[in-house]
Image (cartoon, rainbow, N blue to C red):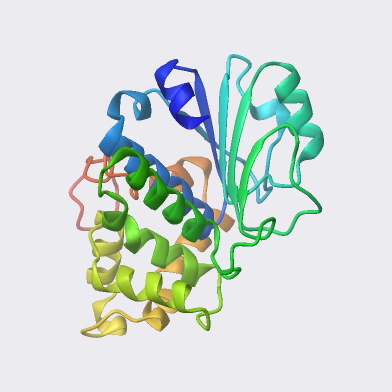
Length: 247
């Protein structure tokens, strides 16, 4: 479905779920696709709910949408799936939340709805695994460059590290920090984090800042934090009145 819509230049909307796992889930997919299909990523319209709602809100989906991507949400929005499918919209959902059944009107990739053994993967973990699979299909090797975002999402969503796969993704992410947002957060909080980043450092000194902005920030502030995780946006300068930023 994804490759088909890329080839068709479908008008694509991505719903960015409003929490740290949701931000990192969408950022992983956007960054991966930008490495392989940059022309497609430049045309994706991403939206974010104004509150803490999750999933598909039909009134927020642009009327011209032909392809909808939901990372870390929407597995159980069966009514919305049906309405959108009847309008000709393809829906790709990559999620980890519990749901009653698999949707007959959307492509749902969810570790809780199949026999995949690692149930402790969060949305970011599932999107990372999806990108690993795309690497196999496309004979590329880009997914591992995004494992740091997966690590942040897994720890932020307080996923169990008893499962070997989840623990290993978190460890690999900590060992390979490449994302500009995470790099900067580690540097700015180095006094608290110490010389080596750990899951505890992520849980106390990076993830809470993201979730705080999502809880109390404006839409513009939330979008700035999300876009700071995107490789195409992270290094853009923005106007600032903060002390020391010199405009």
